[in-house]
Length: 333
Ligand code: NAD
Image 1 (cartoon, rainbow, N blue to C red):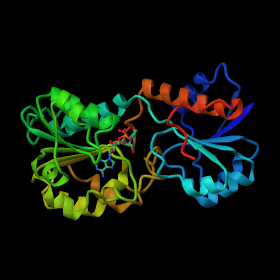
Image 2: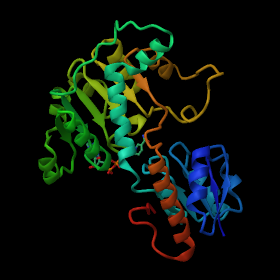
Image 3: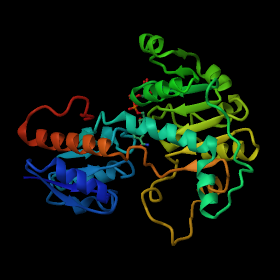
Image 4: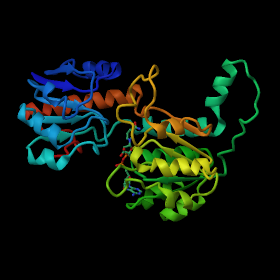
């Protein structure tokens, strides 16, 4: 049996992981709190832990896991910025992730946010339910004929680019590793980062969080953006300097912002805090702007993506015991 402690388990994780492991020798131990240095010891007796985006897998946490005989940290997500890979390697722990799952899930959510924000559907929905049928303040703009700037043309960015091209937008892109063939086929034009910022009516971020990309959107990059532009971030919160973002919203320079991720989302996103006082003042400020739309890291949340994630996670756990290769692209250490 490959006993696996699943941290931060939600009902949809449990359902999909159980379904994917039906004919396997993986046994789940579902835990409803996050993995941190304080909770790592509770994995005792398991061979592996399964973690998500907001678990804090730092050196102290990994030392405790290794001390309790854990052999594998299986991330049930693509990004791995929350794991100290150097420490894991030094401790002899294998770390795997899910390198690919429905990129359509995330790309379609980015476009859903854009359409909702631009056409003010979130405000219209609340109004109509209050029997307020007025249209005042709900004016948007045609996407057709406008310019979209896609930062990062990996799996997700490409799909967003193609969808927006389908709306009749002119699509610019920036990526340090451009794919000219794909761009030609898809009607996309690669430009440098400053041109993308200056010409785009909509900027959408689709890059990993690394020390180099942290606060890619900050005061000086916001100053380069076209006045009135819409910014979309479904990638990682810390790509944006929240303080600078709030400044650009207060000054009216930005037309709107849609976020599925937030710099300080740990401990807030995925939780029901509806009966409590929100302690994060910057998030509280963001929530006051009529032109800010926030979802709680749900871009991955489709049946297809959850099925892909669960299947790859089970395959990686089984590979641990069987000595067969891990799913291609999964192994981080
Ligand atoms: P990917 O690895 O396929 O593509 C990332 C691209 O970003 C690559 O082409 C890379 O060259 C490019 N890049 C790296 N640094 C850059 C920079 N400074 N400027 C411009 N481009 C840069 O990744 P993907 O599958 O498309 O995912 C992108 C990100 O989306 C992930 O890293 C993850 O953080 C995020 N994500 C979020 C959710 C969610 O639920 N909100 C779900 C999945 C992924």
